[in-house]
Length: 441
Ligand code: SAM
Ligand code: F3S
Image 1 (tube, rainbow, N blue to C red):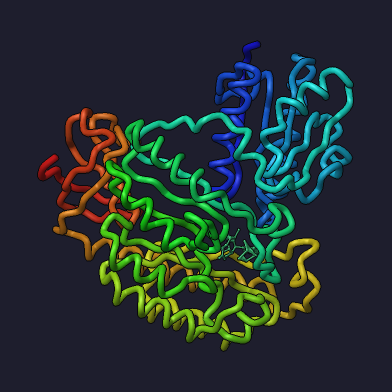
Image 2: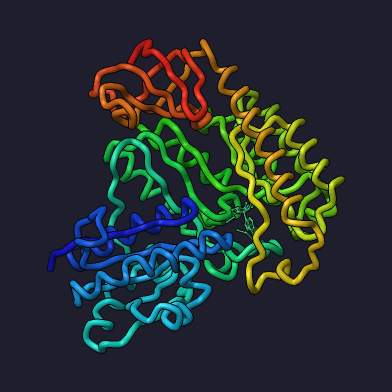
């Protein structure tokens, strides 16, 4: 079989990795090649996100936009996967009856089967179950483009923060076995990958068994660091509750660990953290950051913040601003709280007017943006080791690379440098990228 696949991804990096798997599975099973045009597709897949209401509603608007394509191509299959699919299940078909298949983050490997059953039975298919970690055993080898790759090492979340849908849509934490992770990373390195980002909703909740002994993320990192040819290692997203001293020590011991940690704090007020069920206090969070910076003084720290959680007072918000100011975060994300159906926080009374929440969000974002820019300016004249990704997006005559603290640098250099590390002196700090000059390849 052959044909074309139009795939749109919403939301987080976990979904990006899942989408790469979806393309791989459909290329293998049905010979589908990717297309950027829904009107020439034989299969359309929306890999959705339900973490905030806006992302969720976008899916239904986008579905409405492809509906008419079925008139011209009656064989067109439309599938909805990801977290909205997981949460709504058959409800998607009820709201959009032209959808053929609904699948969840843990059943994406069954997509060919579901499509086949839809074609023979004529009936829409729904499978949003959580068959443990079966999906990784059924997937084709990852396809890599370039020198940087993502490797999923655990799935799901068992933290049940009171505002969050993820534990319900992706299921509880399940780790991939040690040998599978090491095998995948080694195979990627053999194919030219130089930088690997380990992924998980709570990546530091990874637990494994190494030669009969229990192991954690710190131990896994130490093993991966031994793989010859692997030059940079990242992991995301980590949770403060499991950010152990062992993991902090790994940052002091392993030079290949990138000097960047994404550690969502959500709020700077203990009252709010408790209501969010985050499982740590502001003091504990500060202590992690202090010890991490001691272990690795050049580490850059990014975070996630939720503004306007039910009951957040002006004083609570001021505490969040103060924390952000003190800890000098770099390039962080802040979101307006979005009540998610089925989560405990959605039941909480919320007296703060919308305009006030918006105004708080703007104040926090202004601070975070200013901090990120100050960090970029402090990099001026510094020599950075960058992994060259390929031609720059704006000017194909230039190269784009990524620094240890995850900034894009554009600079002049030979195309043959793609996929290699190079030393680049930073010459300008722009709003969303840096400029530099190549010193030595
Ligand atoms: N595992 C991560 C952690 O340690 O917090 C978070 C994963 S979550 C999918 C990504 C981010 O989305 C969170 O850090 C939070 O800031 C944001 N988020 C989750 N639920 C939200 C909600 N109901 N409203 C607004 N933002 C939300
Ligand atoms: Fe969500 Fe909290 Fe887990 S934010 S993904 S329930 S750590």
